[in-house]
Length: 236
Image (tube, rainbow, N blue to C red; front, side, top):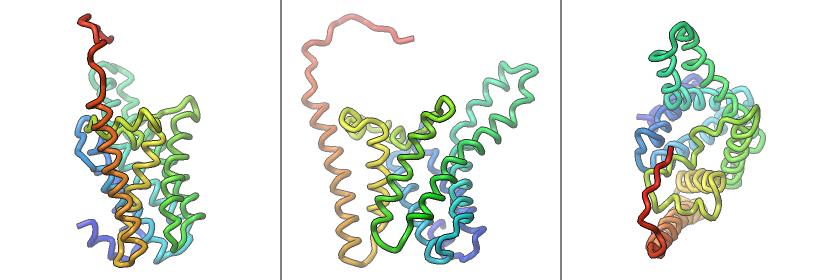
Protein backbone atom coordinates (compact mmCIF):
# COMPACT_ATOMS: atom_id res chain seq x y z
CA UNK A 1 0.00 0.00 0.00
CA UNK A 2 2.75 2.43 0.96
CA UNK A 3 4.67 1.68 -2.23
CA UNK A 4 1.54 2.41 -4.26
CA UNK A 5 1.12 5.72 -2.46
CA UNK A 6 4.69 6.60 -3.41
CA UNK A 7 3.44 6.97 -6.99
CA UNK A 8 1.34 9.98 -6.01
CA UNK A 9 2.72 13.37 -6.95
CA UNK A 10 1.18 15.73 -4.37
CA UNK A 11 3.27 16.96 -1.45
CA UNK A 12 0.45 16.08 0.92
CA UNK A 13 0.81 12.40 0.05
CA UNK A 14 4.51 12.52 0.96
CA UNK A 15 3.76 14.09 4.34
CA UNK A 16 1.05 11.51 5.04
CA UNK A 17 3.31 8.59 4.13
CA UNK A 18 6.11 10.01 6.30
CA UNK A 19 3.70 10.24 9.24
CA UNK A 20 2.57 6.62 8.74
CA UNK A 21 6.17 5.42 8.42
CA UNK A 22 6.97 7.15 11.72
CA UNK A 23 4.13 5.31 13.44
CA UNK A 24 5.27 1.97 12.02
CA UNK A 25 8.85 2.64 13.14
CA UNK A 26 7.68 2.54 16.78
CA UNK A 27 6.82 -1.15 16.29
CA UNK A 28 10.54 -1.88 16.31
CA UNK A 29 10.87 -0.65 19.90
CA UNK A 30 9.56 -1.78 23.28
CA UNK A 31 7.05 -3.19 23.99
CA UNK A 32 6.56 -4.53 20.44
CA UNK A 33 10.13 -5.30 19.30
CA UNK A 34 9.09 -6.52 15.85
CA UNK A 35 12.29 -7.87 14.20
CA UNK A 36 13.87 -5.81 11.41
CA UNK A 37 11.14 -3.14 11.55
CA UNK A 38 13.63 -0.28 11.72
CA UNK A 39 15.64 -1.74 8.84
CA UNK A 40 12.56 -1.68 6.61
CA UNK A 41 11.02 1.61 7.75
CA UNK A 42 14.26 3.62 7.62
CA UNK A 43 14.88 2.20 4.16
CA UNK A 44 11.41 3.25 3.00
CA UNK A 45 11.97 6.70 4.48
CA UNK A 46 15.20 6.92 2.48
CA UNK A 47 13.28 5.98 -0.68
CA UNK A 48 10.60 8.54 0.17
CA UNK A 49 13.25 11.27 0.34
CA UNK A 50 14.70 10.16 -2.98
CA UNK A 51 11.29 10.15 -4.66
CA UNK A 52 10.51 13.62 -3.27
CA UNK A 53 13.84 14.95 -4.52
CA UNK A 54 13.23 13.60 -8.03
CA UNK A 55 9.95 15.52 -8.22
CA UNK A 56 10.56 18.70 -6.22
CA UNK A 57 14.37 18.89 -6.16
CA UNK A 58 15.82 20.91 -3.26
CA UNK A 59 12.63 21.99 -1.53
CA UNK A 60 13.87 22.78 1.98
CA UNK A 61 10.34 23.40 3.25
CA UNK A 62 9.20 20.09 1.78
CA UNK A 63 12.10 18.09 3.24
CA UNK A 64 11.58 19.75 6.63
CA UNK A 65 7.85 18.97 6.59
CA UNK A 66 8.52 15.34 5.71
CA UNK A 67 10.96 15.06 8.62
CA UNK A 68 8.52 16.77 10.97
CA UNK A 69 5.67 14.44 9.95
CA UNK A 70 7.90 11.37 10.28
CA UNK A 71 9.21 12.41 13.69
CA UNK A 72 5.77 13.34 14.99
CA UNK A 73 4.32 9.99 13.91
CA UNK A 74 7.22 8.18 15.56
CA UNK A 75 7.20 10.01 18.88
CA UNK A 76 3.43 10.27 19.28
CA UNK A 77 3.24 6.47 18.98
CA UNK A 78 6.33 5.65 21.07
CA UNK A 79 6.15 8.14 23.96
CA UNK A 80 2.41 7.89 24.69
CA UNK A 81 3.21 5.96 27.89
CA UNK A 82 4.35 9.16 29.59
CA UNK A 83 0.73 10.24 29.86
CA UNK A 84 -0.10 7.13 31.91
CA UNK A 85 1.44 8.67 35.01
CA UNK A 86 -0.68 11.79 34.62
CA UNK A 87 -3.85 9.76 34.10
CA UNK A 88 -3.34 7.36 37.01
CA UNK A 89 -1.53 9.51 39.56
CA UNK A 90 -1.73 12.97 38.11
CA UNK A 91 -4.71 14.46 39.92
CA UNK A 92 -4.92 18.11 39.00
CA UNK A 93 -1.81 17.91 36.79
CA UNK A 94 -3.72 15.64 34.41
CA UNK A 95 -4.56 18.90 32.63
CA UNK A 96 -1.00 18.73 31.27
CA UNK A 97 -1.89 15.69 29.16
CA UNK A 98 -1.82 17.68 25.88
CA UNK A 99 1.80 18.59 26.63
CA UNK A 100 2.87 14.95 26.90
CA UNK A 101 0.68 13.63 24.08
CA UNK A 102 1.12 16.41 21.50
CA UNK A 103 3.69 19.03 22.52
CA UNK A 104 6.56 16.71 23.50
CA UNK A 105 6.39 14.59 20.30
CA UNK A 106 6.15 17.79 18.25
CA UNK A 107 9.25 19.28 19.90
CA UNK A 108 11.22 16.06 19.48
CA UNK A 109 10.16 15.81 15.83
CA UNK A 110 11.95 19.11 15.18
CA UNK A 111 15.21 17.15 15.29
CA UNK A 112 14.02 15.07 12.33
CA UNK A 113 12.89 18.25 10.59
CA UNK A 114 16.33 19.81 11.08
CA UNK A 115 17.95 16.57 9.92
CA UNK A 116 15.94 16.79 6.73
CA UNK A 117 17.15 20.33 6.03
CA UNK A 118 20.69 18.98 6.07
CA UNK A 119 19.60 16.07 3.88
CA UNK A 120 18.05 18.48 1.40
CA UNK A 121 21.30 20.44 1.19
CA UNK A 122 23.35 17.29 0.55
CA UNK A 123 20.92 15.21 -1.52
CA UNK A 124 21.75 14.45 -5.13
CA UNK A 125 21.30 11.68 -7.69
CA UNK A 126 24.50 9.83 -6.78
CA UNK A 127 24.84 6.97 -4.32
CA UNK A 128 26.73 9.30 -1.98
CA UNK A 129 23.36 10.23 -0.46
CA UNK A 130 23.39 6.83 1.28
CA UNK A 131 26.30 8.00 3.43
CA UNK A 132 24.94 11.54 3.85
CA UNK A 133 21.60 10.18 5.04
CA UNK A 134 23.19 7.83 7.59
CA UNK A 135 25.58 10.52 8.85
CA UNK A 136 22.89 13.18 9.25
CA UNK A 137 20.60 10.73 11.09
CA UNK A 138 23.41 9.89 13.54
CA UNK A 139 24.41 13.53 14.04
CA UNK A 140 20.90 14.54 15.03
CA UNK A 141 20.46 11.53 17.31
CA UNK A 142 23.61 12.66 19.11
CA UNK A 143 22.29 16.21 19.32
CA UNK A 144 18.95 14.99 20.68
CA UNK A 145 20.82 12.96 23.28
CA UNK A 146 22.79 15.89 24.66
CA UNK A 147 21.13 19.22 23.85
CA UNK A 148 18.97 20.79 26.58
CA UNK A 149 20.09 18.08 29.07
CA UNK A 150 19.39 15.44 26.40
CA UNK A 151 16.55 13.04 25.69
CA UNK A 152 18.10 9.91 24.14
CA UNK A 153 14.85 7.95 23.95
CA UNK A 154 14.30 5.40 21.21
CA UNK A 155 17.57 5.82 19.38
CA UNK A 156 17.54 3.67 16.27
CA UNK A 157 20.06 1.28 17.85
CA UNK A 158 17.49 0.39 20.53
CA UNK A 159 15.36 -1.25 17.83
CA UNK A 160 17.81 -4.18 17.79
CA UNK A 161 17.09 -5.12 21.41
CA UNK A 162 15.01 -8.09 20.20
CA UNK A 163 18.22 -9.87 19.17
CA UNK A 164 21.04 -10.69 21.59
CA UNK A 165 23.24 -11.57 18.62
CA UNK A 166 22.90 -8.29 16.76
CA UNK A 167 23.40 -6.03 19.79
CA UNK A 168 26.79 -7.60 20.60
CA UNK A 169 28.33 -5.13 18.14
CA UNK A 170 27.59 -2.46 20.75
CA UNK A 171 30.73 -3.63 22.55
CA UNK A 172 32.73 -2.28 19.61
CA UNK A 173 30.84 0.70 18.19
CA UNK A 174 28.45 1.81 20.96
CA UNK A 175 24.81 2.91 20.48
CA UNK A 176 25.54 5.74 18.05
CA UNK A 177 27.85 3.54 16.01
CA UNK A 178 25.17 0.87 15.75
CA UNK A 179 22.68 3.57 14.79
CA UNK A 180 24.99 4.76 12.01
CA UNK A 181 25.45 1.21 10.74
CA UNK A 182 21.70 0.52 10.92
CA UNK A 183 20.75 3.54 8.82
CA UNK A 184 23.61 2.89 6.42
CA UNK A 185 22.50 -0.72 5.90
CA UNK A 186 18.85 0.28 5.47
CA UNK A 187 19.75 2.91 2.88
CA UNK A 188 22.12 0.56 1.05
CA UNK A 189 19.62 -2.29 0.90
CA UNK A 190 16.75 -0.07 -0.26
CA UNK A 191 18.90 1.66 -2.87
CA UNK A 192 18.51 -1.47 -4.98
CA UNK A 193 17.89 -0.85 -8.68
CA UNK A 194 18.50 -2.94 -11.77
CA UNK A 195 21.95 -1.45 -12.14
CA UNK A 196 25.25 -3.12 -11.32
CA UNK A 197 26.47 -0.46 -8.89
CA UNK A 198 23.25 -0.38 -6.87
CA UNK A 199 23.10 -4.18 -6.76
CA UNK A 200 26.65 -4.30 -5.39
CA UNK A 201 25.78 -1.73 -2.70
CA UNK A 202 22.64 -3.66 -1.75
CA UNK A 203 24.61 -6.90 -1.59
CA UNK A 204 27.23 -5.30 0.66
CA UNK A 205 24.46 -4.14 2.96
CA UNK A 206 23.18 -7.70 3.40
CA UNK A 207 26.75 -8.98 3.79
CA UNK A 208 27.54 -6.55 6.61
CA UNK A 209 24.26 -7.49 8.31
CA UNK A 210 25.28 -11.17 8.20
CA UNK A 211 28.78 -10.36 9.50
CA UNK A 212 27.33 -8.47 12.47
CA UNK A 213 25.12 -11.45 13.30
CA UNK A 214 28.03 -13.90 13.04
CA UNK A 215 30.21 -11.66 15.22
CA UNK A 216 27.49 -11.50 17.87
CA UNK A 217 26.91 -15.24 17.79
CA UNK A 218 30.64 -15.96 18.11
CA UNK A 219 30.98 -13.50 20.99
CA UNK A 220 28.13 -15.17 22.87
CA UNK A 221 29.48 -18.67 22.21
CA UNK A 222 32.97 -17.72 23.40
CA UNK A 223 31.74 -16.06 26.59
CA UNK A 224 33.41 -17.66 29.62
CA UNK A 225 30.84 -18.74 32.20
CA UNK A 226 33.40 -20.32 34.52
CA UNK A 227 33.94 -17.21 36.65
CA UNK A 228 30.29 -16.41 37.29
CA UNK A 229 29.50 -16.79 40.99
CA UNK A 230 26.39 -18.38 42.44
CA UNK A 231 25.44 -15.23 44.30
CA UNK A 232 22.07 -13.71 43.49
CA UNK A 233 21.96 -10.04 42.54
CA UNK A 234 18.93 -7.82 42.69
CA UNK A 235 18.85 -4.73 40.48
CA UNK A 236 16.63 -1.91 41.72
